[in-house]
Image (cartoon, rainbow, N blue to C red; front, side, top):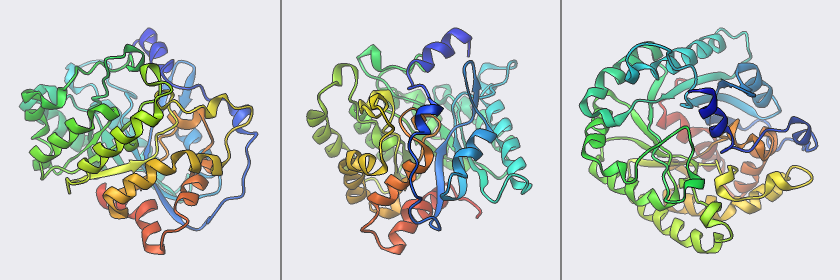
Length: 348
């Protein structure tokens, strides 16, 4: 990615202010509860670095993070070679970080125990060698791909780092590429906006043997042309979520609601939000997803460092534990580690 593109893309995210985050310190709730964080990134970009040491500082903030899953973010793509093979460099990089963690020298957490990379499914059947290359360099950690399809008519909502066309999940060539996943035992992470959830439902029904994870509760929008329309957006989002949940091959990640596009104002407050405030804001979304999918198809996720512009890692997991207060021990296991472990086939 060029520097200009990177700078534009970063403006899509909320800046991380460590001095502001330091103003919120809370006791850790249920510190022994095992957690698999199934969605984080690692990157080194102009003016924004989030590498192993940064991740370790977050996961060692008090909660019992036993393992993590890395999800693609255009990190360390190859500088040369065929364009379609460049994302394989990200998997090489992340598998190296995972190997560092596996040495035991960085603590007990299994960092990047699962890896989700990127391959351009618009290559159609020609994406197969790319997927095989990921599997080769990712060893036994590579689990699937994410091909971002987030699109909206409002250009303010588009991430300049990605340029998916509208309705790409219906494109025959995209679906030809998508068909290559299941035979290789690979899953698909879907990042889209809430008006596109129906597109994913159609895709899931067309490929019932492909495991799919909906990221960030399906991207309910509250920014740009959706500003001030949360009451209008919620029932539309909820209806789409309930319909998607009828597809047994789909699971959902509970998190990722602190991006600029979601329209919450956590980052505008004098002090970082409390975990109680976060839980109250997210409760309708989390409860709707759990009611529709069941705990065995839901997993809490941090989406760090993207969501770090709105709150710290420790308060985030406290908020999740507050949301799960009424759950049984088995239900908590599913939400915090079991679903993620099963979906990403983690060896813990």
